[in-house]
Length: 205
Image 1 (tube, rainbow, N blue to C red):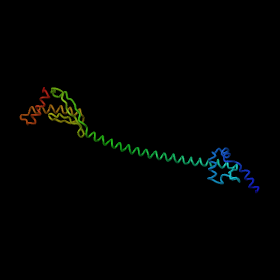
Image 2: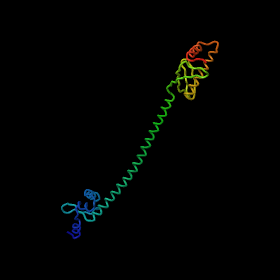
Image 3: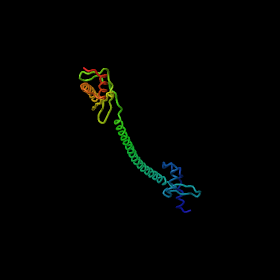
Image 4: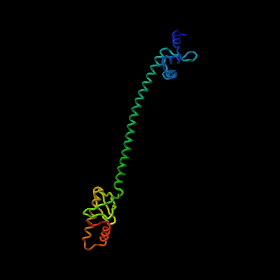
């Protein structure tokens, strides 16, 4: 056997486990690097087919391990950036969903405001010295941009920008209608009916 070959075989005396122990790299990595990178990991196979490593293989294994970790770190940074972009995309999706919900809420609010259910209010007093024989219940509902107060039995309607304003306008209208009908010489059937109802509700001063 040539002296150079014999010297190499004598130097290639480390097992994979020994290389792993000296380099701090797991033995499975040492074996993996050997198969993947070949001669970059200084090693030789003896006559019995066993792989033995030269001492400088320890440094090469450590170098490969550092390169692998650096590559993983770069991949991690890319993953973090990708996660950031994904989070932004999810936020945009959420914003779109919230905007759609807000539009839907505004639409429902518009429908509800347009279809406000009527309210009831009780009137106790009248202007000009007139008074109710007993408290009178009236209907108040939203219509257009204001409120309408109604006394259905007469019938009389008065409007106002608020419920209170509409109710006060109805009080004034009740008195004005009663005075007008009492002063009129000839009444239609409809007017006679209005007057009769008002006289059952209201006492004149």
